[in-house]
Length: 488
Ligand code: NAD
Figure 1 (tube, rainbow, N blue to C red):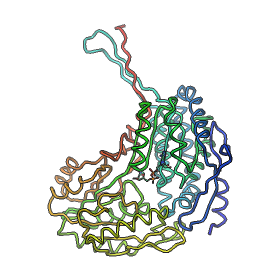
Figure 2: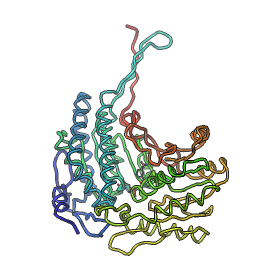
Figure 3: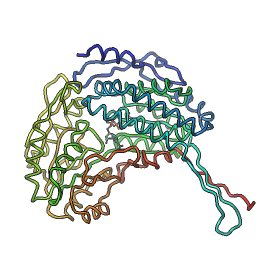
Figure 4: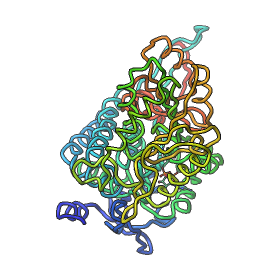
């Protein structure tokens, strides 16, 4: 299936672990296979780290920390800026690589390169803006100094759904702050991170400042790293379930943590919404990344007087989507990441239908090769259906009607998650009330995508702790020191 361009690209992706500035095989020579979810074929075999490899990566990050923490902020900024520039030059390679290992359509992969790159640019700009305070104590008896310091070696764990952006969103602020890192990409999509490490090397990264290990036994290799006192920070993006386990492991060492976890985003359409805009927003909020985004709209909560018209319009759009491998012209729906993801989408639709929902379009898995599920619309989803409680992580748009504003707020907040909410209304006052009332870390008001490197990304409730991006993002990698001195 792979053409020459793909073969050439894949052969230029490193297959080793990146530790202390060197590429090396895993101890014991173990390897793991990486697959193309659109074909089911193996695309590359790479190093499969053992616990000893994980500890070697931590040791390298620890050894590199003192010198990196002392570099001038500008020097760190310039490294990130060179990385940004190199990423622009290699944008097509990164996009194709993500399409191959993760499955998203090429146009979306290009969008991720642009988005992921912005974190390099943004934090190259933020690096020299870390400031402190100096002033008199209230009693006038002394001077108070507040300063910021890098926290130390960090461990970054990323998911498979945005292989580049999840890495740059963590690496860029960590490096800008003066921290060194060990990064462990998801075993399903490790190639993008390996290729990015090579880019950092080309940009002049000093040895040990970024270390990468790939493994099929994430739990066994990560736990000793997390429990080691040399580690000062864990930043995780992934499922709430794994996040809980990692928080438990972090408790012993009182490790600083950032947790970007699952979502169950409501997408509320009021009867005063601009329906064209709501339908455009719905297509983006639901089908971007084949529905496999923590920010994906999970529950379409639509006012009863417009619910039929909304369902009719989205169904028309969804039925026209083109399914296929992301490299094919015009494809808008690629494969899901694996068999389990297909089985999950199928089970959620089945449960919704058994409880009275109607399938308007789609509703079936597609025979292999590849792990595809049809883009689907289900309406009249009944309270108590699993699809309203669980993250779908697939191309299924589930519609629930509501009667009035209180009803919409109650339905929207009825979840353990609070990552993002989408609201469509032409009423400013109603929009403002929703900002006050929705339990959510982010909100799209008449837009279907909110992510931006300049904004604080993160959730409330079980969706996580901390923020990535924005002015806030770098503070996740800094710690505060307060000093009192006598009056001069
Ligand atoms: P996952 O939790 O299964 O895996 C995430 C990462 O953790 C992977 O690298 C995996 O190898 C690793 N991992 C798994 N078990 C581990 C363990 N015991 N110890 C250490 N590492 C372990 O999640 P996933 O399926 O890769 O990603 C999908 C999830 O990520 C969804 O729930 C989604 O909402 C969430 N997500 C959240 C955000 C956000 O910013 N809030 C962004 C993207 C994805």
